[in-house]
Length: 125
Image (cartoon, rainbow, N blue to C red):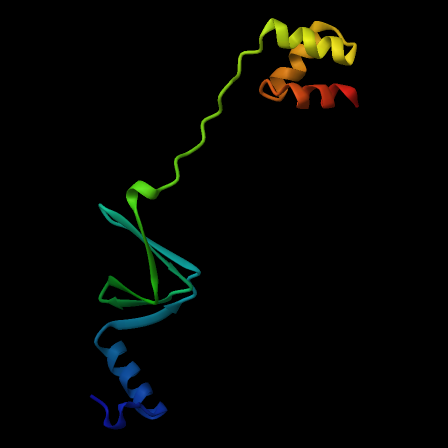
């Protein structure tokens, strides 16, 4: 389109003026990451070059760069908090080991989701 494939600064200014006259405006965005979610995959662009073109109120976004594609089935599944039911046997063991009341042992076990060793360490301090 342009001789030698390059545009000198004067031609660039003329082009920008013509675009303004036609109601077109262009801007580069400083994007860090762009994610596009499709039906079967997710495309993630790290450090993309993003340009927005405004033509009479309609904005068009152009994204260039390399994308990493992941399938929808590979999405992370959110962790759900699970409450562990503390047994009487565990309460007695922690209470005996730490020389504390059963109520204190039960509270410590609930705080650490039933982890005996962690409850003993917690009460030992």
